[in-house]
Structures are given as structure tokens and as C-alpha cells.
Length: 181
Image (cartoon, rainbow, N blue to C red):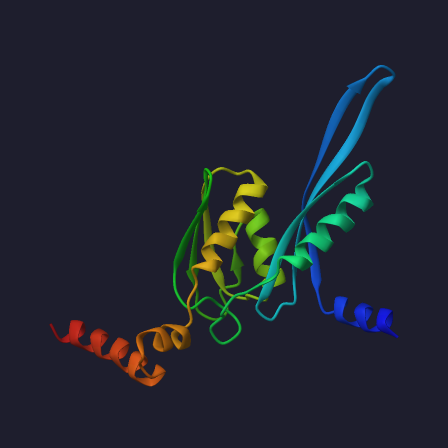
């Protein structure tokens, strides 16, 4: 019974293999190979996580990475369930990423590791640029740093002690005032 429940809960997640690294250890009899896997897991409704797993066999490394990713899930606020609320910059080491909210129909314009994060997160419209390192580990970590800085109008209003409608009205009022000037 408990196992069936866990299987059901696990099936809601989508996992994407981002990168596999093969490393060789030279020993007396030749080379011993090991594998490291980077996996991104998400429910396509605003939760996403990434994990890293190492083992002597590829499937075992992927399984370990998937379990680690499920333990590190974070919730990201999305606008209309399809894009980000605002533009955001993230960095990890030399990996720098810039994420921009996009209008409906844009699609996911992002490269490699970032694309996997957005697909598992459930974002449909985003424009992303990777600058600096192209190392998949640093790109994924930089993307998560950027997503961690993402704020919803609801959380900003709560933090500032305002109503969301007042916050949104101010935003529209500023746009009109600058258009008149």
C-alpha cells in the first residue's frame, strides 16, 4: 500500500538527463570507469530540483541523481503558469544566466541545460541567455540561483504591507505618467 502511494507520487514528476560525465581511474589491470550524472526533476507546475549522482554504471548514477533531485525541489512563482514574473540574473561560479519573461507564444528560447530546467519547471514562454561558463553544472546552478531570486507580486505586496491590486495599479500608473511626460 505505502509503496503504491509512493509510486503514484513519483509519477507526477518529469525528469530530464542533462549531462553524463565518464571518468577513468587507471589501475594495475587497466582503466576503471565511473559515471557522474546531472538530472533535473520537476512537476511542470512550478516545482523543480536538480541532483548529481555518481556510480560505476550509468543507470545507477542516473537513479542516484534523480533521488537527489527529488530531495532538492524548490517552488518557483510563475505568471499565468507559463512565464516568469520579471527579468532576473543569476550566477554560480563563472556561469552567468539572464532570464527574461516573454509574451505568450514565444516558447522556450534557451540553450541546453537551461532548457531542461524550464521544461521540467513547466515554463512555456521564456528567453534566456547564458554568459560565461558553458559547464552544465554551473549553468544549472546559476539558473536555480536566478529562479530563487524570482518574486511574485503577491509576495512583494505581503512584504511591503500592501494589497496586490495597489501594487499593480502603481505599476500601471507609473507607465502612464512616463508616457505623458
